[in-house]
Amino acid sequence: MEIIWLIVGFSALPVGVLVVGFLVLRREPDMRAWVRYMCMVGLAVIAWVILMTVQGRLDAPSSAESTNLEIFYSLSFVLSLPAIVIIGGFWALIGRAATLKRQTLAHLQTNPR
Image 1 (cartoon, helix red, strand yellow):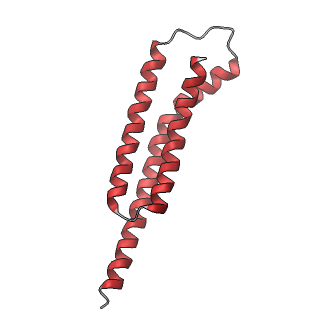
Image 2: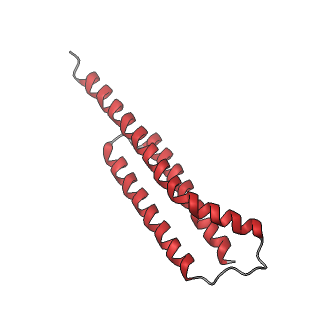
Image 3: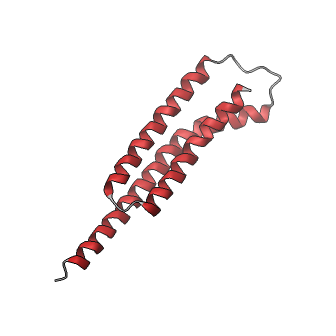
């Protein structure tokens, strides 16, 4: 049963980073939101490390557990950290560019030459 919770945890971290990044991109017009978002990505990495620590303390999986479940578990924890970093970096770059564009357009509208 613990392996299922670990799969959910390892899968939820990249999905959370993806969803929160999209919401911040759509709703937050300033650069501070992206600094907070990058702090959240850092917390997701720390949560991943905590999940790895918890996983290391669990007993070895029994042979009665499904092989497919073990394969999915292996893939979920191996791919979750790269997914967190890649998705977080992607949203940070896209969000920063969008925020700078919004700020430039707002500045040009208030100070026409």
